[in-house]
Length: 174
Image 1 (cartoon, rainbow, N blue to C red):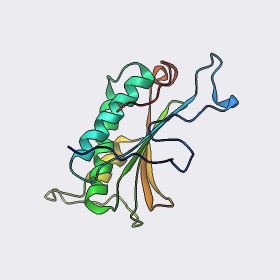
Image 2 (cartoon, one colour; image 1 turned 45 degrees about the vertical axis):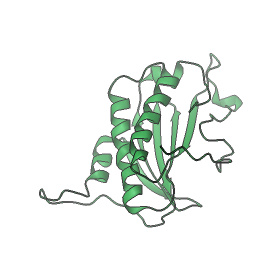
Image 3 (cartoon, rainbow, N blue to C red; image 1 turned 30 degrees about the vertical axis):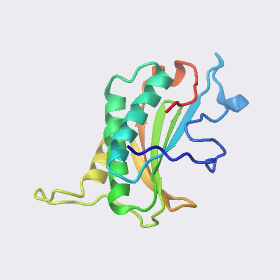
Image 4 (cartoon, rainbow, N blue to C red; image 1 turned 120 degrees about the horizontal axis):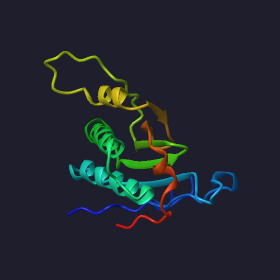
């Protein structure tokens, strides 16, 4: 059984699975943080997609008190697609980062490849190449951005208000 590889620190200064401290203007009137963030380094084998799905559901459960409904299901599916793309076409260990802020869940998968990605039109008989088309059709927005390591592919989903205001922030436990 493979284990997660801990990172010393993310470029933003947080440890994996750690929520960044809220700035004074990053807190709601009731003192709850407006933003929550978590990151994980995933293995480079077939277990990465399943782990990524579990991390998404656990983070949403932790942040919102529930992981039921359409948002967690869609987030799991789309994260699976991004992680599978890294395993197939990318390089290095994928890093999954989730950011929940102002009613938007942003999921990002980073790797060491610098090759740009784009959704492709596929014929009905093609078995592969549909992942980014699924991401494009189910997300509010998506894109690719360069990073110091390579690139990060991301998508955003609108989330219900309850998901951004409920629960206490906790460190991720593995």
